[in-house]
Amino acid sequence: QQQVKQSPQSLIVQKGGISIINCAYENTAFDYFPWYQQFPGKGPALLIAIRPDVSEKKEGRFTISFNKSAKQFSLHIMDSQPGDSATYFCAPYGARTAGNKLTFGGGTRVLVKP
Amino acid sequence: NAGVTQTPKFQVLKTGQSMTLQCAQDMNHEYMSWYRQDPGMGLRLIHYSVGAGITDQGEVPNGYNVSRSTTEDFPLRLLSAAPSQTSVYFCATVSYQNTEAFFGQGTRLTVV
Image (tube, rainbow over all chains, first blue to last red; front, side, top):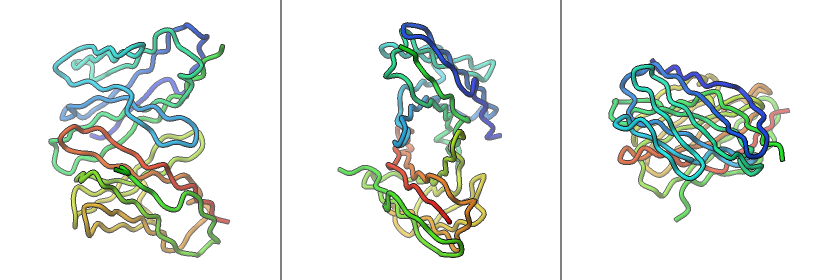
């Protein structure tokens, strides 16, 4: 039950537009729902994360929406900027599950056109 | 406080050669893992460890060995390199307290 499905694989958005990336998971033991951002030549870094006790979290232009019943969470990038062009990964995790693996979605390559 | 350090950053190997990719962390995290990332693809888990002396396989373990004798170090060994192992390799650590993953800068490996 480690399957994580991320969509879309890529998207192109105009500067100022909204980017939306979705992540669906199977394991109901997950209790931490992060999004990571990766720039070319760099390792991924945490962008924003949510716990299952809230349905939405906003940090600047980035928002996570969480739907526990549907086992999905999404990343919204408002007012997208060229500097947001990167690859984004979801990586739902269950720290309290013994021996749990940290697995990532397939990634979404976002290109913001000026 | 270096975080997660991977060495080397770049490496070219000939088919059949062996080598070890090093990963060291100074964050005292229990969980460490190795991933490979191929062009246009996500991060695929090779091996992981939930603590010193404990390792387990990920989704693509064939051709790789690991060991975890200390909390700080988690080396990845390629016993007989193959061109299919050409990739960028990332090491990551996670603290069970806050669950954020921290990554090294990656090792770009080419097998010719």
